[in-house]
Image (cartoon, rainbow, N blue to C red; front, side, top):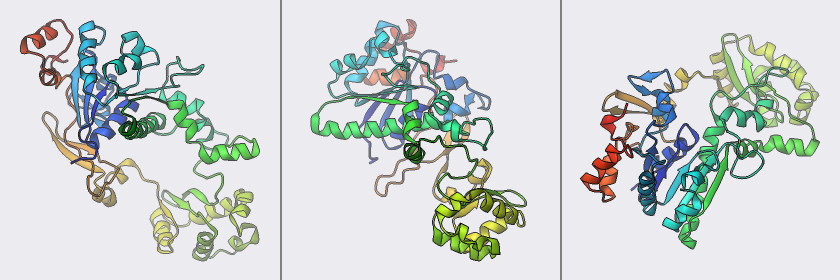
Length: 399
């Protein structure tokens, strides 16, 4: 049995932060019913690339879910949702703050139908505060949260991370919040409202950079592939590519000096990490000249043999075909009914007795609408009426 077996989640989310959260919970065994509008999750249209008619973006974060198309703007659609909530443990949404209240399905309404229900809300800026009503996007959170100010090369244009860290991070915080609330409910019998924002996520991840600022009142600067507190701990260019060197303590530094065997590195000005941080520019200049003399793989092999932390800067094609990643089952394949073999990323949390599992491929829009309503006790006639009135849309009628 999977660890979250028996937990039912109503998923009102779309795009990335919410679907990533609910996919994580589904991988661990929760039953996730994805409620889509008649237009569907926005990302079903985000492309190219598409695999046949399916968006690669949508496929990446919606496995292990059931899809029900439900018009929540119709009173009957809202009534169906609230009936679902009566049997649910968790509702997850990532609308702009205030939207649920307008729809008549905010937390105060939900808990009237289910005292123990947990509502997790993911938004750009949170449910409170001066920014709460602003539209929130990942790139805004990265910029406003400070990440872009420390990402990129010194004196360069601010740069966002290569993928959506704020969205994915907020999805992870929401997952942690949901698991915490489920555990607390075991004691109190009550649900609660979880408020997670993309901006809070970015701020919370500042950690040592914020600590440095609190200690000095100086804004940290972008350092490219380097670290503000540890030297050398960064990307270096070899003769044919780039690799990462992470010298996290003085013992490793001494090993590196022995491997490179270059007299200037034995200078006392580089003896301790504080010395090396103080004399960063001079030291890095020496190392850069040395590392251009051999290939990336030659340096990685030489340094690894001395147990000095290092590794190549991989492209996705490198890491997704890496033997280690394959053994860790971080790339998996499943048969899709219309797409053939579908490759997906694996489950990163490895539980020894009850590991997560990918059971089903991402659903077609509305694939489970009729099945779920039948399970809820609606008759064939009622379901046909709902279809005629546009309250639900069965999978075969979806565009």
